Image (cartoon, rainbow, N blue to C red; front, side, top):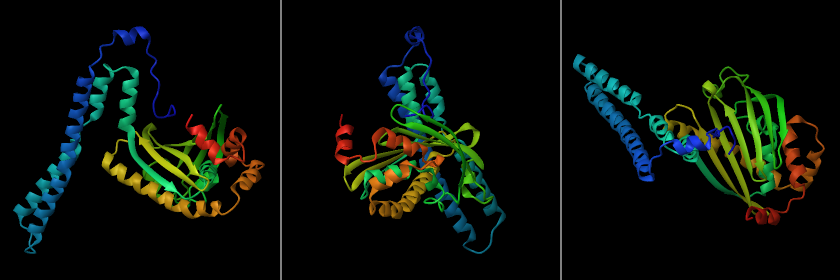
Length: 311
């Protein structure tokens, strides 16, 4: 996982040894209480909605709304909004535990707290089709023109090769004033795309108030014409987590629906030939793809990749 998700803690050995730590039982009990509070709060939401709906149907049943009924509806709505406002703040548990946890435990807690959704698919397309698609920046404008509401790439601002991959930063713009993505982010932001290894690609998108949505793609070859595709999304947005999870699940399914015909078309051509042709492209949007080709070649055999993943 990149530094965007979990930051390392500069804690000396002496400070770690001097810091009191909770036992695993105490930590587990604290986490259980936090989950219990959240569960009760989530259970209260449909209960309040049912109560308000039932009260509304009773009030409008006779076609006349009395003063008492208006007052009852207003009171129920007020308490429902108050209930939403009283959402348990699990960050308090995290902050109280972080003083007692070792750095690794604290980081794992933060990572779990920021995890939003997981999706897993087995796709009937070669693994290289998925890699080519993930590393080609122009596909954000073409393949995903509908889901991203005609988002445009302004320019590539930074590229840094690594020993097993690379990092590319590029600016994108939402040129439409009614683009729904404006609820997530500013009109112009710098997005990070990271090739961690031959199978893992990370997309890091800044949103408001220095918060981010991070998508981790893992593509693992199964056969020459099939691969397993994992999508993991993390975020530190302060939105209600159930609502955010629903939106992210919908967005992931929509983008995969857009991917399907394109990946199918790629699978029908000679993907290795496509790799070799694009190797000579000088377009900045292909820099990370070129890095993949440079490290792992244009004629990668699926069997070799599978053997390498087992090492």
